[in-house]
Each structure stands twice: as C-alpha cells, then as structure tokens.
Picture 1 (cartoon, rainbow, N blue to C red):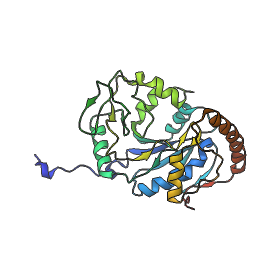
Picture 2: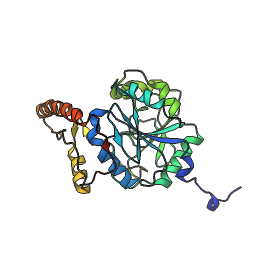
Picture 3: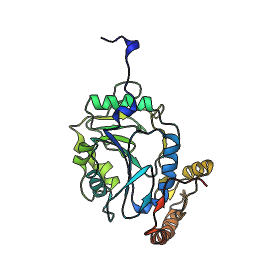
Picture 4: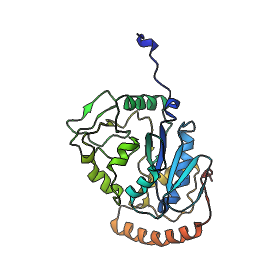
Length: 276
C-alpha cells in the first residue's frame, strides 16, 4: 500500500496511444484553420496526441495537423461518422475549428481527468461547464461531476473527451451539430457522462466561440490582433448586435466564400504559419 505522499498521477503522455484530437470543421470555415493551429501550438506545444482536422475537399499542408477528407458536406453527424471510421484510437478529444486556445493547457490536470474517465469507463467528459448546473448534478469533487440521466446537456459539443464507440453509437446520419446537441442526450441515458461544474481552473482554456452565427466575434478578432495572427483569406464579416446587419453581412459573405473556395481549390493551405 502506497502512502499519500507516494501517490503518482500518470503523465499525459501515458494516454498518447489511446487518444486523438479531432477538430470538427468543413471547408466553409477554412478561414479559421490557420488561427486555430496557431493558438493550439502556442498554448499546447507539447500536446502528445495526433491532431486530425476534418475537411471536405480542400487540401492542407502541415507538419502538425493531419487532414481527414470526408468529401462533400453532408451535415455534421455524417461528416463525423466518416471521420471516425479512419481513427483507430479508442478515445477522441473533440474540438471545433473556432475554439481558439487562450491560455496554457494544464497537462497535469488533464491527465488526472483522463485517468478518472478511463478508470470509470466514462462515455464522455465535457471540459467546459454549463452556464447553470442542474439541481441533481452529482459533484464528485470541486471541479467535475456526473451529468444527470435526464439532463438535456449530456451531448454538448464543447471540448470533450469522448469514447469513440460511444460517440459513434449516438450519431445519426444527416443530423446537424445543433440538432445533435438538442436530441442526442436521451440516447446516452445508460452511459456515464461527466462534466466540469465550473469554468475556473479548466485544463484547456479556450475562446468559445470565435465564430457565432457565421460571423467573427469581436473577441476573436481582438485575440488575433493581439497575437499578430492574420486571418487569410478575410471573407467573413464581424458579428453585429443588429439582426438586419447580421443578415446583410452573411448574404455578402456567402458570395465572398464562393469566390474564396474557388480561388483556394487545388492550392494547399499552409497551416503552420499564421503570424503576420
């Protein structure tokens, strides 16, 4: 029997053969790929896991990110099903392309969380707390707990450690990300789902989200300016508080996106250099 001062938590690299980072995206959001990679490498340069980026048809060039081409966009769930078929790791760490890291990743804390999830056969472990916890949320410590079986927040698409088979089992072809979040919780009622209970002291701090309603948030643009990150090509407008202005800007942006995609076709996107 070990004394308390002799206890040793595993290092994050222990999980390297079991976990893959999967960045959910599609070609319509390729303007976020270079900033995402910049901030990921800046704040998690010692990430021990392979990083996969879901793309449709665009080509990328990177020593850090491996693309998974899923072909024509068929909504979020179908794209994810295709991507997961090419990943052999039993767990994935889910990201989205507009989740920009904005602080150093705490590898020690993340290793503790992974160890708990692995030891207790958790189907998912969401590393971002809800704005308001359910009354019957079961806290396990001062950081995280068990999401209630009847919660509608069991499948939130935040940065989450997912058991690959569990995620695959709740996906439905053609389902959007929004519909998955709204409908899939009941599909997980027999599974153990964990979640952070507060947004302080998270192992992976990130901006959620850089793109809202199809437009860049002011916070994301400020983060990029401060870091000297150039968004190229710049076809996406900035978010506005006015609904009519958002609609107008999205209309213009759809035309700009079509031109940007046509121009980028057959030209690999360099992901490893985003600084101005």
